[in-house]
Image (cartoon, rainbow, N blue to C red):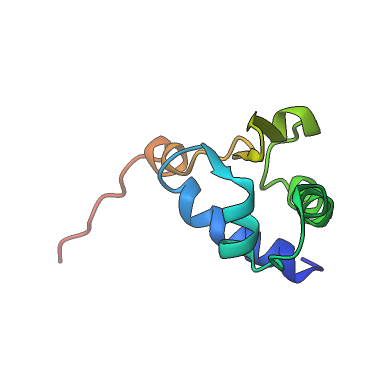
Length: 106
């Protein structure tokens, strides 16, 4: 990963995807509190700063690709949500699909 923003976003989302494949966050809280962007940025600048990091995580196959209209949703005046979906990786299915290995007793 190239940017610090993509690394922070990856670390934050990886912990959440363990519990579910789709998450929705308040955009300002995510950017200010979790990713560490400056509080002086308005919503437009927050989205502008997050887009390259999100694109990088999509190219790496960590996030599912979404158009901006779905990724950033306006709920009310001044209230924006950021939606993230795991890119088809189901952690439980990998372990569940392999048969248990027999233990050898000496």
